[in-house]
Image (tube, rainbow, N blue to C red; front, side):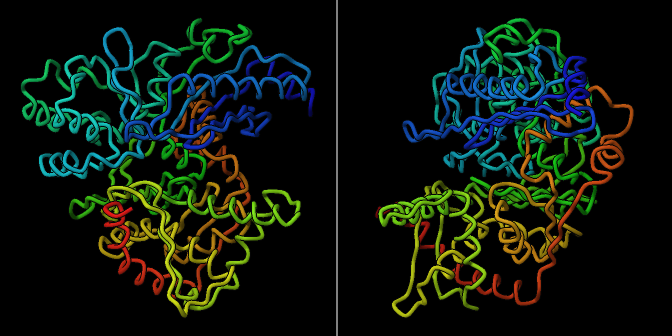
Length: 527
């Protein structure tokens, strides 16, 4: 087997997917049987600078180079061959955000990520103008808020892109964008598979004094499998400064983490959905028809093939849980305990199964940042209990695990209850699901539908991006058929169906969660 894989590596029968997530950059090298043969990763964190969440571009390239180097070293150690060529490459990153570049390709303001929640005025105005939901995270909301703020850089914008689009442009020289990622920049016209021209015209009419037209600064939209350029000589050095990686490798259209999540879970058919839960949490439900009305809490985006998807996105999920677990781990170490961090997470997550029916009347809001769905502008993590609450470990952990899904639940109820969207199953992936069965049960209770976990769930978006890269070379079938008949034909899947008790307990918790939200909304005024 090792000799076979070695030959595949030499022959370029591989695909490389690299995804820049919120806390980790991950790379996966996959063979032509869609099996992972090597990986690499790099931990990083966003920074709050001048009130804006950002990452430096220096860290972007440092992280990519470190991740690729780790993967290449693994290839050499396992298979005795230097990695100089791959069949195809794909890059994805956290969606949305704001990367405006001037005509020289220089960044005009620090990268503004999806996590910033300061675009409410723009979001409301554009939603009304276009009669289409424009969340604060979207690139167009960032752009219009900058216009409303009279920021000096506006007339100098030559190209507006996202993180994955920026990386792809630097590697290939191509100003293109996968349609799933593009749909988080500006609304997509589903028939033309491009940005909606009528809405672009409306935006331009609103901003007649600007020196550019919107269509001139946005990337070209591509669907999965389309030609997106090749790795340039300079681009190859940006990934691998040693010069071993050769130029000329084909790249697929860059995508966002929502799109790669859909691919990694085979959730691109109507009535299927996936939920990605980590630093943030979002559920993607593939629609059979348009929603009946505009909901400011719900994004309408697309699959990488261009089909309509409803997206409920919450900025906050597991970050506050991570903080508490770190604190509990420090306490244990102070007492002389030694343990593996994964075992600590597993133990604490599993303890939640013993929680009381009322979760001890504990309540938490793990809002490190603002939250669009619940109308919270700035985050203040908060844990609240009553004098007679049952304050024990099981209730404490269950409360935090439930709360991590609170904002998402509000979005899901709009889709599943108010809009009566049909959903047969949710596919879960991300760190929230890492402890077997726990996050899966919590999510099933929140959504009220079965939640499935695939054997490849831990591979995540980088694997999904590698699949899209592979599809760039094997696009003779529709993307749906390619995934179903080739990639996922014999995939192992574990499904949990929520009980009536699961659903009722979560609903009871949510009724208290909603009542207490006003405390979270006003906390920034006092803390």
